[in-house]
Image 1 (tube, rainbow, N blue to C red):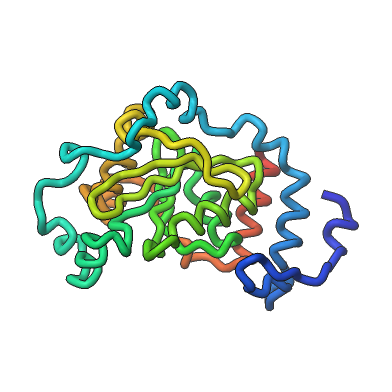
Image 2: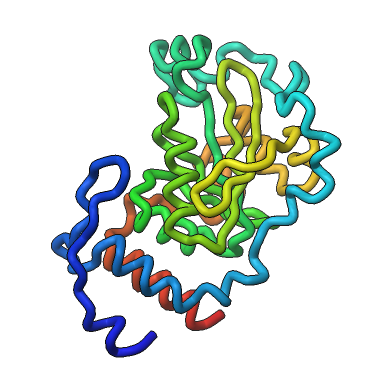
Length: 237
């Protein structure tokens, strides 16, 4: 990163959603972040997910079966889900669970990227890459999160796994664009079991923390802390 990159203070543009991305109290705008990240693109050259390889023949329905879902109808209540949340989940107006699956080795780095992208999530370490359990699961909230993250970090692809009305769907996202569908059973065969456990509500961040998993909340860091985390990880490789 050059000194000119650090000194430049461009006016923050408006994004397509109409939100003001101008500099805040921390002095960093989304445009500053994007420009700075351009210098690190090569750091992610080998970090694209291989989950889409060979998935074309298995992407038929892209949905789970009854075997993919918990048998206990009270599972939502046990995890603290309100009756209204359960009802909206049954109707499909709100996803029961939504995950961003990455191949980033550190959940702290994923959490930092989520903070810079304006995504509220719980990031959890996994053997095949950190995952982000999204908090905004209403309407198109999960898709918007995938778009934001892959727009901010253009060299990073993710898989968005969503459980809506007991129907599982998974899609690759890259450069802010929804891509190939992956059959959830195929995905679950390629990733850490924590992905399936979370999306069918068989595990929660609390139980995973008790099991020794690293769990990082995006609410635990502000933008300055997130940017410090990003630069530390990228500079160390």
